[in-house]
Length: 77
Image 1 (cartoon, helix red, strand yellow):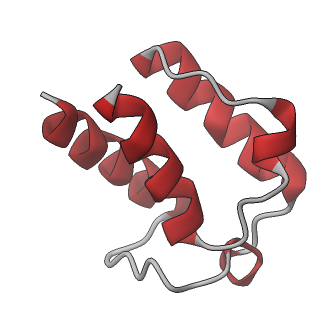
Image 2 (tube, one colour; image 1 turned 180 degrees about the vertical axis):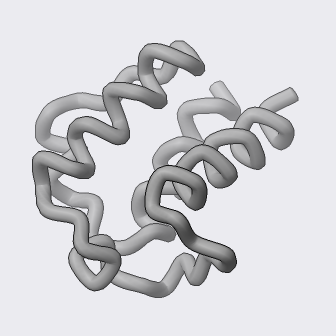
């Protein structure tokens, strides 16, 4: 179940940014995302998948991998 959710979240992320491939090593800023974009995207994930991010946590996401590692950890709970 968690695996299908993470796949769905990744797909949503790629569609939102119009990406054909997702390189998790890429910095969020290199994708044109600023901190407000990241917060907005995380709020969408919270609403759709029942995941909660702490405010302090959102500032720590530097790469795509950081973001998805956090999502995967939350889905595993």
